[in-house]
Length: 482
Image (cartoon, rainbow, N blue to C red):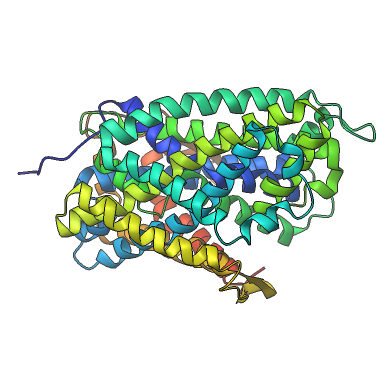
């Protein structure tokens, strides 16, 4: 007999919550930079192909694991196979490590929201503003506490009243903001004769200039790494949300909608940012990624817009705040749900304990920019602060390890049929059509055809292609291959 468990009230509630998790800071400050660096349309084409194959495979797998076991990541893998509990442990460690610094960055976004809404956008665009803020002793901690408190309050209210209700409000608003800013960005008249449309063309038209085989391989690894951040796999989140997904709901259709929503927003994030940055700052402005793009380059773009810049900047950072909030909610829920399933604690106790731990770690990371400042070496000859170390270990090591472990578990130990049966148990089709391979057998002068169903393609992907790609990604993250 299965235990009672909260669930999303509808498929749309699940889709919006899962899409809210997927649409986060990774889409907004990493996707545009990678697209600009990796040849514009070339990166887009590779990303879309991987989203339809690798991304779809991992999403279906994790949601199916969650719904089948009715457990969050920490206990779900062990329930599938008693020797696979370590995968759930690593999958839970990822959001546990990400939450503190994600809330810090959410606090940074909130700071800029306040600056632009109050008409101080010009000040926020000045040299040294961002560095001066993050190296402060009190202000970054205050904004981190505020952001974390909002996230914890939503989780405290539960799956329906908290996560689902807030997602139904924020995700449509976020989409409206994204579309409006993207359209505006393409109409911008910049400096030195550049326009937003010039930047848009640079974004969508593939560029193979100076790209050899190793460069294309780098594009593939970049696109796959971005897909991790973008669709929230290997973090325990989709397993957790899958455990709240009703048994009689259409899993395949919902996963497809999540991918469409996430890919659309990721693409529109590029339309928002690349045309505007290119119009005002040229190719040099497109070389910024992460905090440099969000908190230094873009405020300068808004400043260059004149009086309109405060309004556009405020709209942009409100949109980013919504994206950061929905993602942080899913990150905290993945940990809280795992604690509840493992230790049988109440939601109230689990939320309070994890929030306090995240706050303590968050304060330490904030202090890593001032009184506890130190530079730690990272692969590739890079150095970083405590935040960068948390980010590197969780995203570049643990996430590929979790994904590889998942592929081995489903592909070779419990077998792909477990996921396929769960994903199609209500009579859904795994996909409408597969692929037909044909050739001519000249010895017998007859045409041969093989029909590959999407179930077969899923098996090939989860057993062979995905693990190889993931292993290459892990080696690249460790700096072993470049």
